[in-house]
Image (cartoon, rainbow, N blue to C red; front, side, top):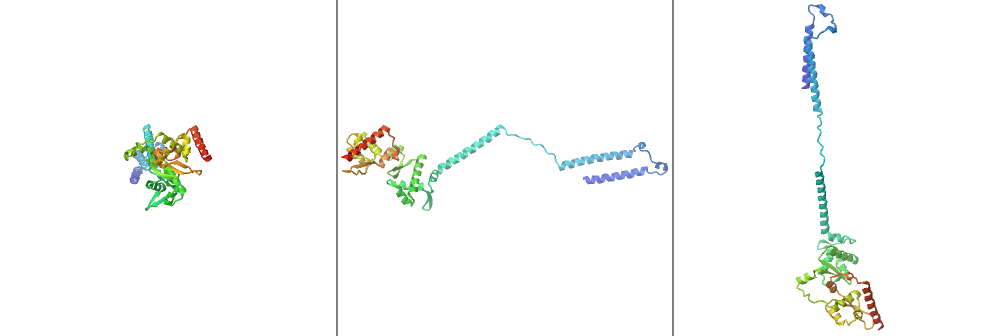
Length: 321
């Protein structure tokens, strides 16, 4: 479009120039060929028309150039800059808090699900054994064996069954013990005389007695409790040592406790007459809701000293007899 306009303009100018020359060519008066002073030359109507045409062409060219520049480089419109408001900041903060809480909940759920596995990770090396084609952790296998055992079992018995060394089995038993306590489970691992047995939480006793319709009306008498206390804190002890602390004959009480399975003979003293040594049983541990003798209430220093001195004196008298 621009090129065609330029060609048209040039042709028009040439035509005008030719027409102008034809008008000023001298024909009859040669004197008109003389040069005329510039100052005296007055523009004719044709010249004024040409000048006007050139002005129009300049305007057209200027507009065409402006349009071309506008097409080549369009002006950039300034974009409105928006700044975050307080509401936006609060929304971002709330979203961040929700994400953090979700992550924390996921971690807590994952921790609860994998509590047993996390406990097993404390055993070095970590042992995963195969049973019937499936992988199980050592604590899971120990738990299964403890559940079916009809009597307390020692660590070496588990070691033989699982074909593991005793140290690894003992570490697994300790981990399982902590798992039941820290996980607030309904079971406990009872340990007595280096033997282990799976029992229920002592607080469940009334519920279990009612559920199994057990007779819990029989209570221990005061003398029976005194005798049990002496045996529990100072075992193994002889009947003479028990009587030295209590100050009375304890033969009938001992017989009753033996019949109920709360105490047992654990050996004999290598002295004249070979007096019997007594100790508490696993049933005693279950009855009083403790998993280790170390869980017994701590005696006052004076009480502990008196008990130790009295039983030691009775032992010395037995040696002199």
